[in-house]
Length: 108
Image (cartoon, rainbow, N blue to C red; front, top):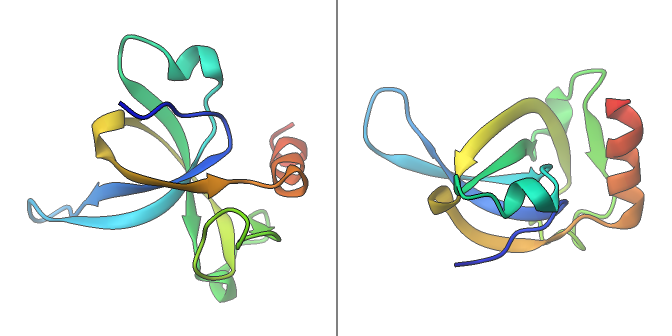
């Protein structure tokens, strides 16, 4: 099983509401190491989107998106979820110090 750390960028399977199909979407792990190693086998994640043109005022741009393993300029969405680790398709990278610091300042 893959080990996950806070601020890892990942691709997760998001189900469609009307079918059994899934769509791959990027996200960032926001749970700490204690939570990530829990026996429930789950993670807390924050959604990521490449739709920067439709960014809400409080959503944050990811400056070092390439370093995070993302394919396009992206933003942190305002959507937090708990997912089973089995829904993680792959690990892409990790947020830079700059981007993780922007996230920390925003949630205070």
